[in-house]
Length: 145
Image 1: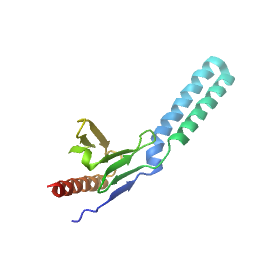
Image 2: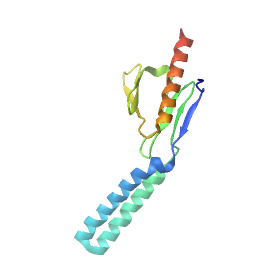
Image 3: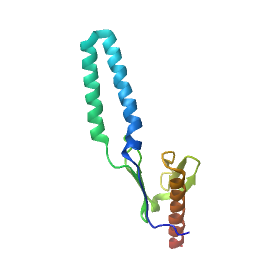
């Protein structure tokens, strides 16, 4: 079975953003209910408007592209609304560990471990990702020898 040179998965906006937006709207509801209980309708309405405005501003500031990409240079990903884009070149990696629900990358210089959660992927995508990473690591190891 041939392993592709580039492995890429696009994560849908719904899967990446919806869970965090539900939590944010629940927090807005809690803010409204607390202020409504203390200050009445006016306080509740002001709290609701301010919290919804804050959630909207944060959403538009943080939204973006959600993906996982493995190529000949390294691996990069951004999985959800509050995560940042992470890119790790193959030359920086010392070790790759495959666990049940995550993949750990150990960085050479700092010995820091960067975790990638695979729980957001389908089982087939996770297996393809692991095969692609293994193939790239083997190829780079073979090229350096």
